[in-house]
Image 1 (cartoon, helix red, strand yellow):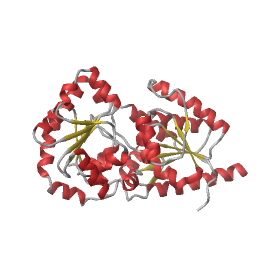
Image 2 (cartoon, rainbow, N blue to C red):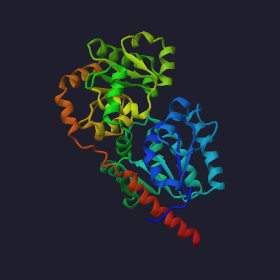
Image 3 (cartoon, rainbow, N blue to C red):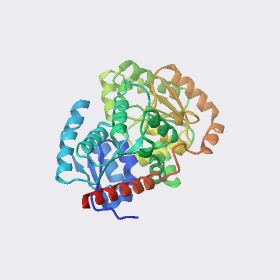
Image 4 (cartoon, helix red, strand yellow):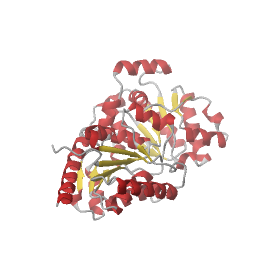
Length: 376
């Protein structure tokens, strides 16, 4: 394979899920990767821990992006990325998913006519209330190479008029991330003992999306349903996102968590270990919808909509905040252990764990063409 020049591929990210999904790609690229962190989500407890946990190279950090409005984040990141790409022009830019950081990276690449590769292209929730939906559609319109995780994602792009030659079905990089970061069995056993949990005998929950945390009624409904599950005899472990903790306190909802085992946020490996042995996961996360298909665990997705229908076939159920959470939880828990055995035997719809290899191959072709054009 053609050796890529040092720092020739700019990888723009700004959130923890992007760090998770791009880690193997960064490793495979080696010195060719120039990691740029916009700071959309940056705090030492979460993003800082992820950078060190994944042993990633020190990124170039942008400043003054986090904490702003959506438009403020995109414009602040775009201005700094444009200056970076002017001072040190990459031969290709990579963005992942649908964040404000990804859109800023895509616009900066497009404005400087730098080839743009979009990892996880073609996801669609068809929910115009989601800022992420607008971000991902815009990125897909201007990307030169669109790495669709599934054939359904490819079909979404073709239906929107994207030319087939721009699309590659690569699988989702989350598959290799889970395989690489899941701790070995002995470490997982020790972690369960530390939390006083029994394998296949507890629920793991996370809540962080604005549609759930910014609406006190929705947040109350979710926490109340989780408390009811715990009261019925199944322990519920809730690693509490800092933003969610603030919202709980602001809404006076501490009492609704009385029956839950609330912890600080977890590192990615610890979270995967606990998810691997949970009887059920309840979450509003996008990434966990993919991760459960690799771990073979059932999931209740607490959201209005999802851009990952592939997970809904066997592994997950989509519900809005309210009694349906408890009803579905009771059904899923009643299916154990037979239901867990069934899921463990199913392949993930998100690929074979070689997505990052395929993306590196695509980047090699892009950079080779860019080098040839520069030489000419």
